[in-house]
Image (cartoon, rainbow, N blue to C red; front, side, top):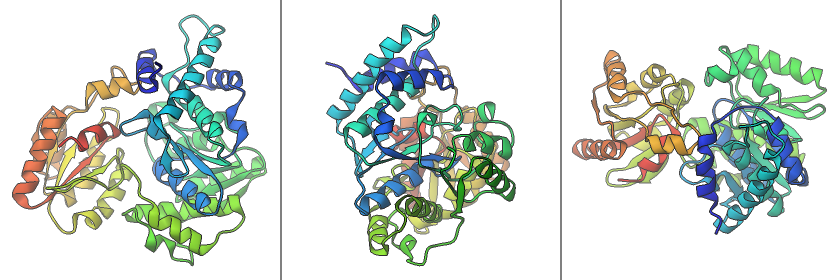
Amino acid sequence: MFEAEAHLDSLAAIGWSMGLERIEALCQELGRPQDRFESIHVVGTNGKSSVTRMIAAITEAHGVRSGCSLSPHLERWSERVVIAGDEIPPERFNAAVEQAAGAAGKVERDLAEQEFVTQYELATAASFVALAEAGVELAVVEAGLGGRLDATNSLNSAATVLTSVGIDHTEFLGETELEIAAEKLAVLRPGTTLILGEVSAEVGELADRTAAERGCRVIEAGSAHGADGAERRLAAPGEFQRRNFTVARAAAQAFLGGLEPERVGKAAAAILIPGRLEVVGEDPTVVLDVAHNRAGAAALARSLPEVSGGRPVIALLGVMSDKDAPGIIAELAPGLERAVFTELPEASLAARGRPGAASWPAGELSGLAARVGLAGEQQAEPVAALELARRRARESGGVVLVAGSHYLAPVAGAG
């Protein structure tokens, strides 16, 4: 029997490369499933998954059958496909991945020697198949990395959302905010709509120029809250989520042409975002947040009191070696009592197409923390590190915060 999760994991050894040739060929072989629904493309440094889910929730509340394609997942590949607010059933996900895998085998016959459809490309194509087979009218699709060369750029989207621009993935996207923004704005289709989140003035000017060149209208969601006050009803905690909701609402309104405040409020009250200030354990309370760059850590630090309730916070931190660990620690340190530093599970890194990817050593993280006055302990094995953090939280009557990487998500609920 075909097992989608195992098959996708098996593709990790192929490695990872950017480009549109393989995904275009794969989607063509599948009959371009992404053309069977309308789509909104969500790009940005932070906030993509949250905004993607929020847009779909608002449009679903207005009677539009909506789905999401998300990246990355926390524990299961099937989390990447959401239909009408629910994770796709395993049997439907299996069928979609099997169909995409069959098409990939045909496409690979025409590829150069030692060139294969990648894990991410297959997962993206399978999500398009699953969304089409589910009969969604609208798919809200989150870009994986950048935009211009990301597999999701095979969409013909009706609108593009730029959630934010910060410094991340510089080895692929560029060293400056403007270089990174240009990669993300490259997905904008002529004659469509760009919804702009909170960005710098320079990025805003670039967005305006890009939109003008392509005959697109620009809607600046900014940070202004809507008159209906739906953000105050948002179930998802965190000021950053209330800002994300403002962006999502602007995108939904652009797509629908108008919103009903009661339906917007109902959607807001039901929205919870996995992996963002998510309570995943009790006794002591364990909170998971996958913030993994400096801007994300700063947003987390500002909102952490909403879930800690004034209790001491013991952090379990692990960070990939290509991330700004000094910046992440500097942002989080003032709100922490202490931290336990760990290393990311090699098996998880390998299964996600990052074989050979490295974690910051726990000892180096501890040294960075000492420079900003944060007391800490080291435990390289993540499950043992979580138990140590839980023990410290019980001793102090505090809560545990698991943060720094998506790859700690499976560990967070292990205590």
